[in-house]
Image (cartoon, rainbow, N blue to C red; front, top):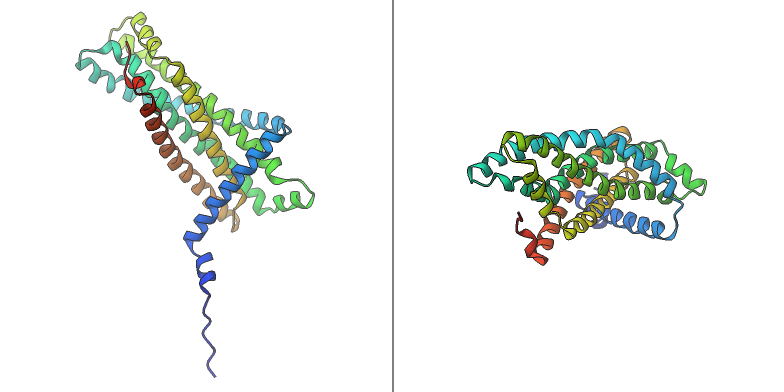
Length: 275
């Protein structure tokens, strides 16, 4: 007598599909984000661990970040864009243009890509390794809330570090520009400094702090969620790290573009280069 062919139900096929897994992963990120905000706003017991995580992030990210932004601005801002501006007869406006461009665009996406690639991948791998070693289950059995103990300090450290590292990136860019442009294009240093001063606006500073904090929070939530949801041993950890970095990169580019578009649409006067 032939065996009956087993047919999976519609619900089984849907829940086992790749699309459902992505939806479930996105829902998990929203859940982690809301739980993190709730715990962070109701208690400060996460603060000592967050300070330790912040120090670790700076040790990992500071050197590659400074190297990346310095090389990028030297090649593109000084020797490519600078020659274009010189050909247009306005070399004295190069410093202000570089400051505005780096403050709103370059510093953000270079900082956050280094941030996600170095610190984010490390956090995902750490939590994923704990997951496959069943340390997270052991903490739950002992009554230790995993979100409060492991996720909140990391996400808050990411939020703070993103703001500070973004400022360091802008500083590194302007120092590199200051060391090269006056000598390469024979611009007086007083003109260089004056061009930068005229383009420093309070609205820009506040907007970039808010933007970097939101992006840092987003990267922290993505990387922690992917680490907590690891499946399949060491291979699953590697896959989770890859997914966390890719999602973070895509989210940074999308959020930065939308934020700047909305910001300049609300304040069109800020799109005018001064000096």
